[in-house]
Every structure is written in structure tokens, then in C-alpha cells.
Amino acid sequence: MRKHKKHLDFEINLIPCIDLLSVCICFLLLTAVWLNIGSMNVKQAIGGQATAETEKKPLLYVTFGATGSINLKVQESSHVPKNLSQLSLPGVAGQLNVAELTKTINDIKTLEPSLKTVLIQPLAQTSYEEIIALMDEFKKMNMSDLGVVPL
Image (cartoon, rainbow, N blue to C red; front, top):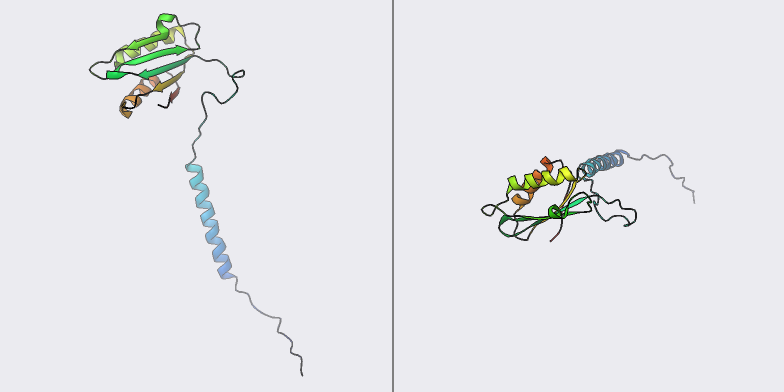
């Protein structure tokens, strides 16, 4: 019997492997771009740290009432007197009374200029337009930290 030597010269076709790797790189680049665009910077405004290390800032709670009325409650403020710390503003024809709200907030802001945080608590039947209109009014008054309290 003769011994057969195996032929050690053979060819490997690398083109399909390179094609597959190039497609994988394209998918990697596309998903990296989508992840960067789809991300949103969210921070918890209140309650993320221990109460001892939380700095006390003035806070305004706004609660929607029936027929467009609004209840305002100022907390953590030593400059706002008791008569302005809890107010109820009646609505006009079932809508927000924007003129009265602006006047009241300006009065509160003159007493407490560091007031920047507003938490809005809507009712279940409150429309999104009313919430957005209220947020727009607060933005016009340089109140930058706005939030919606869950029902």
C-alpha cells in the first residue's frame, strides 16, 4: 500500500466573511446613532437623596379644582405670609383665570424671588390643554422647574 500525502495547498474564500462583517458593522453604527438620538436626560427633581442632605427650596403646589378653579400652596418659604401661602383662584366660565393667576404669582415672586419649582396636580378630568397652558404661564414667569404630580 502506498501512503497518500494530503495536499496542503487549499484556498479559503474570505469574501463572504468580509461581506458579513461589513453588514454587522453597518448595523452597529445605525443602532449607535438611534440610541444617541432616542435618549432623554431625566433627573428626579425631588426626593432622590436623603432628607438631611436635601436643600430646602421654596415650592409651589398647584391643584386643579372643579370649574377651572386653581388652589395654590407655597411651601418651604419663610418670606411668604400666611394669607398668600394658601390661595384659591376661581375660574372664569370653566376656564383658568390667567390674569388673576399672573397677578398672584407676581405678588408671590416679589416676596420670594428664589421660587422656581412648581408641581401641578391635575384632576382626572383635566384636559392636557389646560395643563400645558398653565405650564406655559409659569414658564413666562421664569419658573423653570415644572412637574406634574401623579393622580
